[in-house]
Image (cartoon, rainbow, N blue to C red; front, side, top):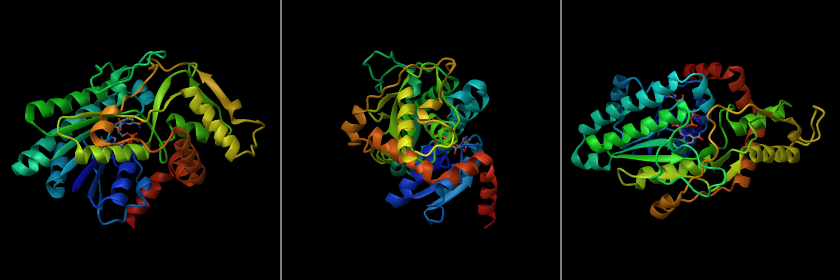
Length: 356
Ligand SMILES: NC(=O)c1ccc[n+]([C@@H]2O[C@H](COP(=O)([O-])OP(=O)(O)OC[C@H]3O[C@@H](n4cnc5c(N)ncnc54)[C@H](O)[C@@H]3O)[C@@H](O)[C@H]2O)c1
């Protein structure tokens, strides 16, 4: 298959590409604008593989997309490009509306234009796989045992989740109105290697290593379901190759954790792995600092992933304990990656790659 992936230089997209290049025979075209969150260095291990191709492009640029579709002739699109950080969506939402809604619209239109030119057989095999979030469902009560299923009504809380909900609606409309063979997946919080250090888990690890405060919103009682990113990459591959057009799947890790417990678990791992601290503390837990809660902060997310297990035989392989240990070790062993991103050295690194 030729698979066109948008947002392949991001956290999840790069995990999907590493998986596809290492574990399958498919050809990949990575279409990414390289915003602050896009990082080609996450793909260094596969960048020289002849089945991997990269084009720097904005998904809002429909004409460029049409050109890429015509040249690459994809059998499937996996759409991961997005603005993805809730805090940024609260302070500055315009980019979220532009990329997540308008960009998805342009990508749908470019896909439809290309799909219309295919033979009937190729049309029926084509898939537009939209990667979305469980945040479109809003939140659940802390004490509730209820879980998000594929038929839970949408009730997004933040500009981020509202923009993702909008894009999900567009994708479904392109299926119903134009017959474009789409699939949507809604996933819980991902964690793992190559995660941009603004998100809770990498931020906590990196702040702790520097003896900085570990900020926790509100009382830290908010619950998230955590999925190891490589489990997500495997799930997405199963879905794009096996799911019927028009289907929706929830993907989750069965790993509900309070934010405060996640931060404490990271501290315990660091106490074990990096016991020698130079900042006058006996445990990294002493760095935990509660800060005013995020506006509109969702209380609890919890995914029912029964359908993907039943239909496609996918279950996560990593437990939260094993995945978190791997993640902490990865950040401890890849501080150059982190430093380059944090110091802006990354831009110089990219330029050098392009020159060579
Ligand atoms: N991270 C999570 O926990 C999580 C959970 C569920 C769903 N998702 C969804 O998965 C997808 C990927 O998330 P992520 O965490 O890897 O995001 P990310 O922020 O790490 O990466 C996003 C990528 O999209 C690219 N991009 C942004 N705007 C673009 C544009 N206009 N044109 C082309 N490329 C553009 C960026 O350069 C970056 O490489 C998103 O759609 C997100 O909503 C993420």
